[in-house]
Amino acid sequence: MKIDILTLFPDTVSAVLHESIIGRAAAKGIVDINCVQIRDFTENKQKQVDDYPYGGGFGCVMMAQPLKSCLEHVMQGAEKLRSRVIYLSPQGQPYTQETAKRLNRDYDHLVLVCGHYEGVDERFIEACVDEEISLGDFVLTGGEIAAMAVADSVCRLVPGVLADEQCYTGESHWDGLLEYPQYTRPENWEGRGVPEILLNGDHARIERWRRKQQLARTRDKRPDMFAAFEPQTEEDRKLLRELEKEQGRKKLTGPVTYRAASGEDIPRILEIVQDARESLARFHIDQWQGAYPDAARFEEDIRLGQCFVLMHGADIPAFFVLSPLPEPGYDAITDGRWSADLPYCVLHRAAAAKEYRGSGAAQALIRCAEEQARAYGLKCIRVDTHRKNKPMQALLRESGFRYRGNILVDSEPGHDPRRQAFEKILKDKK
Ligand SMILES: C[S@@+](CC[C@H](N)C(=O)[O-])C[C@H]1O[C@@H](n2cnc3c(N)ncnc32)[C@H](O)[C@@H]1O
Image (cartoon, rainbow, N blue to C red; front, side, top):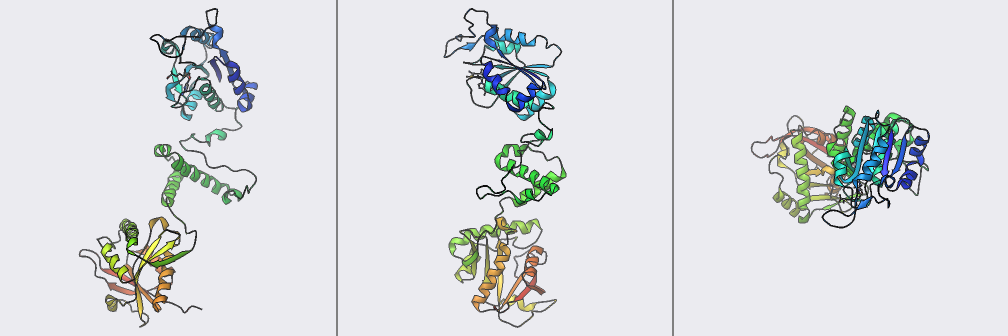
């Protein structure tokens, strides 16, 4: 790759581009970077490169002639090269990694023209420039910084400049994503560790973690890029599904307590009910699919002192309604029987917020309900759930409840009244 940079500050630009990685590539002859002084091509004694703008206004404009002569000079001997004349301009197309890839792929000679002052005579652009590139939507005093950015980013794609192709194919912007987070020694720095997964040497898991991080940080830092990203592989699609599930998830980071709900908690309770309603609908479970349970129901539960909210810091991750009174509908149990004729309480309404799913909030809810049952002086808890509500059934079973038979509830007209009945006898606390 040959790059000619036409500038009024060739020493500064050359010094920067002949440092470090690009400088070493130039020393090896892998890239050839020349910075050419535009002023050397003026045709006036004063070596003047700019003049006042026609029509008046502030500043000066770079004249077309020195630029054209300078360009003709660098084009000598370049006949066989695939050349591209680029004017760095705030009016150009915004520069991206895709542009860098294209310039590296399609050309072997780039001429980068740096303007200064108020810019360059429009007729030079019309007559000589193939393409205008902007470093971004802001204005620099000259094109040099933009030219250096283009030269650097194109040169590092030239084979042999970096140690391996993977050095740039895994980086931010290569395939529409940002790079994963990087760490180096020491393993513990100012109390901050390195993610455990990077220390275990399991390369397949590390690769997967890194790809997921790429997707997650692009989503978080550059939603615009993320919206345009098209997953190419089944693995990407799988990771995206995982991220979607995890999004907004909260963890239980401290103790979970519970308290009696007040009227002020009703909006939050209804929010949790709505989460549960939507989740049940997704699984085609005909439970809570009508108006029940509504605000009036919870007002009544609160008035009776039977509604409780779990507290995690100031957050309410779940609620439950536990009644110490027997439920007449439970007497007519079919396909089984209750295990004991003990006084019991009934877990009527309970749910955890969707952002706490998988956090242990549901298990905490059952623990709190058991504590409240003991507070009522009762050792038996009964509860019913829809026969299709497998997640609730699983939670009950893992919490020590037993399936006891089937019952019918007073459901709203048109909704399935059949429920499975579960029971747990609490052990005495040691
Ligand atoms: C002060 S600017 C001229 C801006 C011009 N008057 C305009 O408003 O479009 C001087 C030179 O800096 C360079 N330049 C300024 N902003 C740039 C950007 N965002 N990207 C690339 N080059 C830029 C151009 O080469 C330009 O000729």
